[in-house]
Each structure stands twice: as C-alpha cells, then as structure tokens.
Image 1 (tube, rainbow, N blue to C red):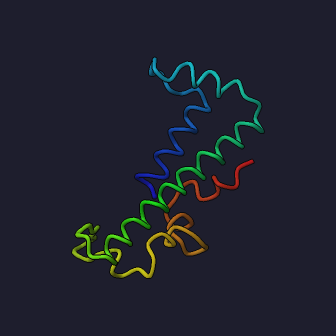
Image 2: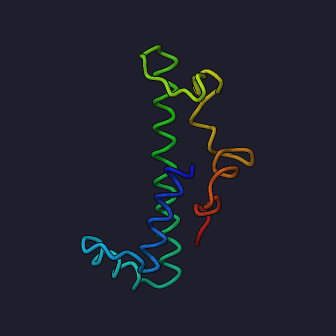
Length: 112
C-alpha cells in the first residue's frame, strides 16, 4: 500500500498543493491548484478510486494466474501470497484490509 497506493496519492496531493517543480507538470499543476476546494477533493477521490480499481484488477490477475498455474507468483519470505489468500483482490478492503492497516491515505476514497 505504501509503495503503490500511497506514493500515487501522495504525488497527487503534492500536485494539488503546487509543490512540484518539474516543467512537464506545471500546466497540469496550475490547472489543479486553480480548482475550487470541493472539486479538488472530488478529484482526489477519483484518483484514489482509480488506483484502487487498478490494484484490484492486478491482484485478481495474480490470483487467477496462481489458480490456473500459469507460473506467475508473488512470494514474500518464500511464501506465495496467492496461496495463503482466499482471494488477493479482496485483501485491500474492509476494516482489516491492507488499505485500512497500511495506507497513510486510508480515507482518500471518501474525500469530498
């Protein structure tokens, strides 16, 4: 959650705060900074939802590859994460999910 979800949401929050100096981001950053605060919160919510959807789909594909024995595995300390899960795509959600437990921005999807 920290290396994917939080980095992406943190990038967006820096954009909203006008903190990026990269020339390639200046036009987008200026447009986002100029948005009303309620619209900025809505955009943050959209960013979090997009990240969560992409993460869900990626985890579903990993679980499917494991279940179909396609040779794609993610292991932590030598243990297949798909093997010990009853559905990787569901792991991020809920009160005991990865988002709630590990994300600095656990409530970003509720912004706005």
